[in-house]
Image (cartoon, rainbow, N blue to C red; front, side, top):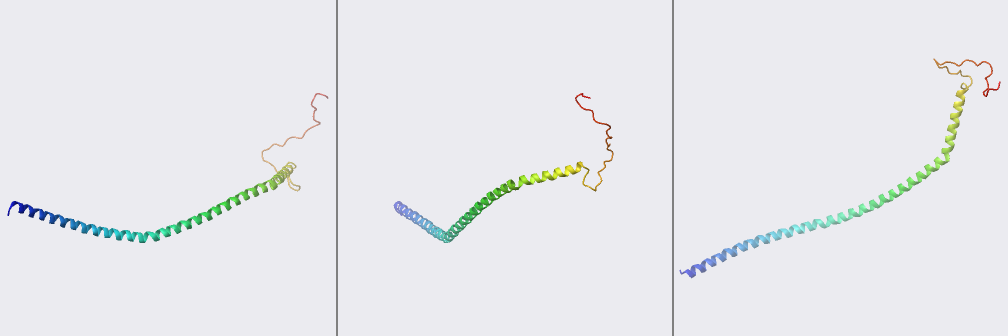
Length: 145
């Protein structure tokens, strides 16, 4: 064999190995692409219903928030009405009740000064001195006697 034939044979073997290597790589790449396609298809099949359910959940949450907003508005109105009613009751009954309480306090205090209720003995305090009886008329102020 001559040197040109050997070189041609080496080039043919090199090309055969290269083509075989590329064929294996292409087969593996095709398998990977098939697996990726199946994965994407599976994810799509599962994601579409999930997105539908998520959309329904968001719509439901929005309607619940609308209801809560309506309830909060009603509570605010009730609070304002209760405050107005409290103010009205305080204005209407507050003054007279204070006057009645003051009158009752004055009556109790007046009865306490006169010795209490009739039929009851005056209260005795131990250790307290009783003032002595006064003798004669009181002297006048101003120096005129």
